[in-house]
Image 1 (cartoon, one colour):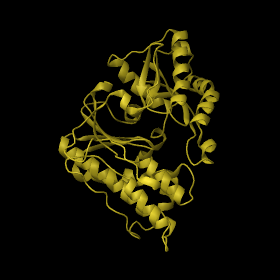
Image 2: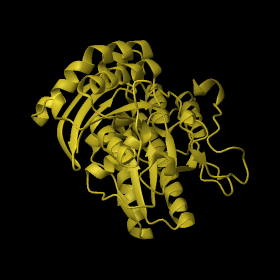
Image 3: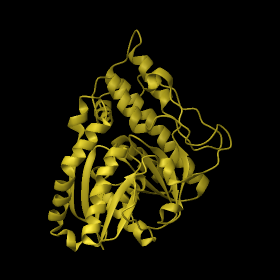
Image 4: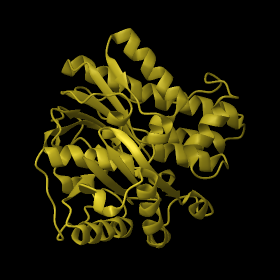
Length: 355
């Protein structure tokens, strides 16, 4: 089945044609240079950039696949979570194309799109699986008991900043610019991960939730202290602490659930230190690990196409009334109960350093 996937949730405009787990054509336009001067994504600018790029990107994907729109079997499009204006651009284009070509249409959860990127790089879908979704906007531990979106359950979430968001903010403190994750990783190679002390994240009993705001605030205090550490050392220590927190949660989820297959997804999954640490944990604990190549960790249309195919096979359908769902809560995912510490996934900011 030849599926066109369209992705416009944040600051990449992307489209891809996928068939039988193979990427036939892919187009991506990044807005990183546009938003770099502002230190983060500006929603209005993102929407305007998507408007300019969407038609050329879809054409590039079709040309790369050697196809016309009439040769497609399905259109899949991200409906959220994400920036509402950016989502509307992709949704409007996808609905118009599907209507014009009389093609079926499905809306895709962007986060599940990241998870399904693993099916483009070696994972043969079999359930149940655990998934660590780690990006600039989300850090979640999921359990998937089947291909249908309704078969996904949240086991743990960050209670404050997402891991990628924390990377971006610490990079800004160090004057490294945007996006911060790759800059931190590059600088950390020159530093000593034991050079300075950062707090270990407190564990909540019976919870798989995570927290990164305390690490970020501690980094802020060090940067503004009387004797700040070398930037490379702080980058190395901060990265090591974030990686340790993520790996510890994956290991705990495997132990508690008994599920022995772990998929990793999202932009932070491209981080080399995280990939190495998770591979070592998989070897030590005896679970199977799948991580997409770095090029498929960031937002792309291929992951949307693959997730759309899975949703379509599970009976999902959409029409011209399909609307964006900017918030993850709108998807109605169920969360595992938390014995202590409040509701999993609650968002508590860290005061003046959390902005």
